[in-house]
Image (cartoon, rainbow, N blue to C red; front, side):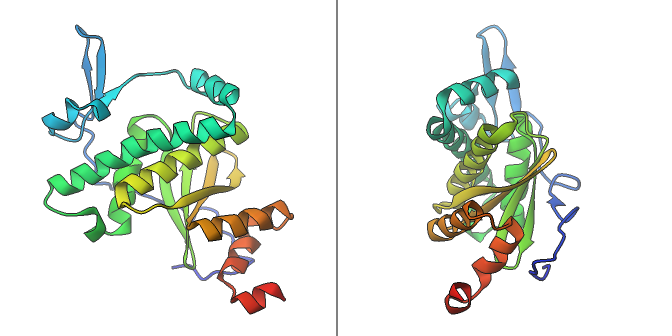
Length: 220
């Protein structure tokens, strides 16, 4: 774990979860051309592929961007959370099918599954970064750009983690560096505090440092 410090430069510190991943994309997407259907599978889980949660559509990224821009941030975040919950549910199903439980799985194992699901639907390459106790989920090469795209992606991550872990977490986009977006994952109170500090002009690195400080020190 990297020590948290205001001068810490995390460039290149995001750890990829697919380079040596055990995620198996075999039959992850099936095309039923006679019936005009596309389904997202969960390995060899036929029951899953027949469920409503598996039904999918292929939408050009540009069209998704237009929809998000027209819908506004509130509707876009709900769209993202709905999509994310579908992706996260497949990770939970897969862990259960293998005889385990998502709560017994390591964070790395859960994120590896989520990275695979995000890649399958074309929303980018997911990895994670630790700043002390703070967890940042990093996504590179997402197809929808701009602030509305960042809001969509953060909501997708929020929905994924909630469905996969069974915990209600919140997300906040904190840094965009070229093609890579960093999203803070935390509880509601922490997200609100960091969002307020960012709004006051504090850098995201310093905001995470302040998040770890004792309340008395933080107020000084």
